[in-house]
Length: 224
Image (cartoon, rainbow, N blue to C red; front, side, top):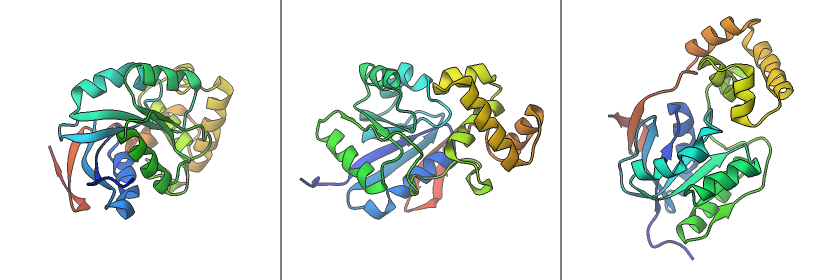
């Protein structure tokens, strides 16, 4: 049954480009979803129905912070949005207060459907592991050909994490991490970790610290 009013959504992520890209996915569904706030490393203060947390570069920390995120936001429910559907991540997130855990292979329409089900009181978990759907937003490095998984690895390298730390955070094998690094380096035209860090800094891979209030067009947000 359609909602009497559009869902009020706050989007949370460490990167402004990621949060804005996710917000754009909802534009064709303005009659069903209103993005009231976009935050990067800031509390979400606007009253809303759901805080949607994109886990880009924060895969392991989200479950342990789910209850804290809810306390710091003005949202009734928290939903995790991730390409990493490791069962332990899902169980831990739900146990700590999340009302849903949604995979990035969902189309924009299916994502809206899932959020409406969460708003109606259902606990929603998707099992569609794999690469994101074509309309699944934006991320640092996308215009340079990096996939979202490669970009996440480069973001973590830029933040100073070792391969072992990245593997633990992203629930990947060390060989998978090395494979992503090799493919990323080819696309970035770098050959060393120090070069990769500099490239990451120059191309927006350091976390942002902004709070954005949508004002019609995404390009006209106010920073606080």
